[in-house]
Image 1: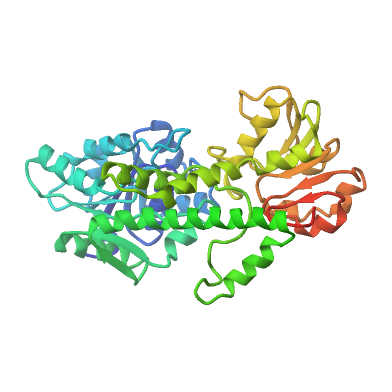
Image 2: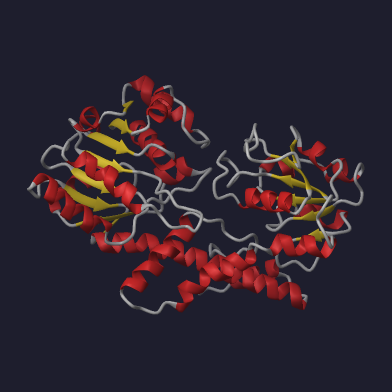
Length: 435
C-alpha cells in the first residue's frame, strides 16, 4: 500500500490532532480530520490551527493546497474509506488534574460503527492503562464482531516544538496485539521513524505514565534540592552540573532547578498511576509525594514576595509572560495566570505583558493592566516576575529597564534573565544564592 493510497482519519483536532493531521499530510498520506465542533473543523479547513504552534498553520495550508488534507464533522464521511482511525483528543482535565476519560472513550465509540472491517484504531490520547482493553470490549459489543483492531501509541508532543517532535521522534512506542494491524501501522509509522518499539498495549499505555511520572519526580527532586541549596549557601545550578556529569545520571536528565511544573500532562499521569494503585490496593508513597512536593513549590514566588513586602495591597508588580509555555497562546494550566489571579486577590496592582495574549481573560478586574510592550509594564513596578520565558525578553537590555526603575527587584524562578543578576540589588532564582 503506497502512502497516497492509505487513508487516515485523525479524530480530535485540538493541539495533538491538528499537529498529527498536518504532519501526516506532509508525508503524503490522505488525511481526513474529524472533530465534533463545527468551528474547529471550519477553522482548520481555512488552514488555521485552533492553538498557536510554530509552523503549524503553514503546514496545514500546504496539506490543504496539495489535496492531501481535509476536515469534516461527519463521522460517515471521515471514516468511509479510513484504513486507520488515529484518536488524538487532548484529554480534558479539571482543576484537580482529574481526566475526563469517559468523554474520550464515548467519542471513540461513536465512530466504531462507521469503520470498515479490518480498520485499525490507533489511540494517542492520554488515557489510563487498560483503556485499550475497554475499547476492544465495547467495540465487540457494538459491532458483534472482532473485525476492528486497536493499538496504542502514546503522544509525546511538546507545546512550541510539536512538529519537530512528531516528525523527528527519538522512537515511536506502539502497543499492538494483532499481526495484521501491526503491518498496517508499520506502513503508517515507518516514514516517521525507523525505530518502532513494539510491545503489548498495556505496556505502551504504562510507558507513557512511567515517562511522565519519572519526569515529574525529577522536577520535584531538583526543586527540593534547590530549596536546600538556598538555605545552605550552595548553588543549585552548580549542583545540577555535578549531577549531570555523573555517568549514571547523564547530561539530559530533567534536573534543572526552577518553577513547579504546571498541571496537565505530568500531573495527569501521576493521577492515573495513583488511581491504578488505589484500585489494586498498592502502596506508592514515592508517586504520592510528587504532587505534594510540587504543590508546595508553587508557593515559591509568593514566599519571595513576602520577604520583600509585608502586604501586597497596593504594590505594583510586573509579570512578563502569561502563556502556559513560550511559543503557544494557551493560558490553560498556566502558572503565571494562577500567580496573577493570586496577586489580584491580595490587592496588588499587576502589570502584565505577553506577546501572544492580545486580550486578558474577561473575569480579570481593574487591578490587572495589560501593556503592549514589556518596558512599559515595568515602568511603575516595584518587582518584576518572569512568568513565561519568551525569547524576546532576553533581547531587552537591562539598562533600558533599570535606568528608569533602578530599584526594581527581579523574581526569576528559572534564571531566564540570569544576565541581570549582577545589575539589580535584588534578584531571586530557585536554588540561587545571589539574593
